[in-house]
Amino acid sequence: MHPFLNTAFQAARKAGSVMSKAVDRLDRINVEEKQRFDYVTDIDRQSESIIIEAIQTRYPDHAILAEESGEHSGSEYTWIIDPLDGTSNFIHGFPHFAISIGIEKEGIIEHGLVYDPLRDELFHASRGRGAFLNDRRIRVSAIKALDNAFLGTGINRRDEQAMQHYLAMLTEFYQHASSIRRAGSASLDLSYVAAGRLDGFFELGLKPWDVAAGSLLVQEAGGAISNMQGGHDYLFTEEIVAAPIKLLKAMLQIIHPIRQA
Image (cartoon, rainbow, N blue to C red):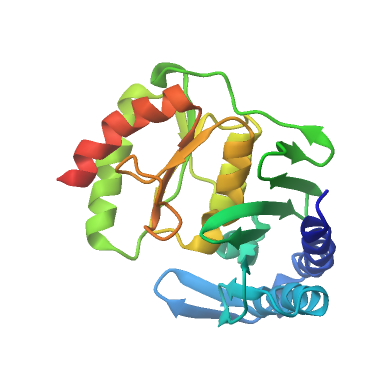
């Protein structure tokens, strides 16, 4: 494992331990609503603080982009952090949330890590070196057609126009795909695509910290990533499609006309 990922994993494991303990005493957690349907807890902030401290101790010149504290200036490398992806799941005791850390250089994600503390599952990848679940190499599924596809998705309730597009997509996919799941953690959904647990994934309204690490995992596992226009600029466009290459093309044939409407 690359030294950057070792640092990320040590920090994620420490933050994950805090989450695992807190999920058993949710009545003591402070929950705030940042905006409608968007929550933050003191555990999000504590996790982020643990991760940032670890990075700044080892790599004080690196930049940081974190969900709760924003940008910390630096040079060359940027660590893109979601300290608790799936906060709504977490505050309800729904056991599906993760820590996501992507490491970007000159606009390209070079390393990525998604850690599920409850299952102790570490998804990680470095560009050109493959994707792994703990110590096991992972690959995207071999599914090529939508009628056999088991898809993941996410719902953005904060943008009315995007919601209308999303509902139209969902209607079309329900007519063509085998099944669809909405689990509530984009980083884990992308990790599951990389591991073949989901055949594909699509979502609107995402931020860079939601997709930075997971997008590299999918690519290194043999899959493809795009925005909903089929372009490669997905990190900051707030939309993503991920799947094996042939399935991605089939998904875009449904998504693109709706998104253009």
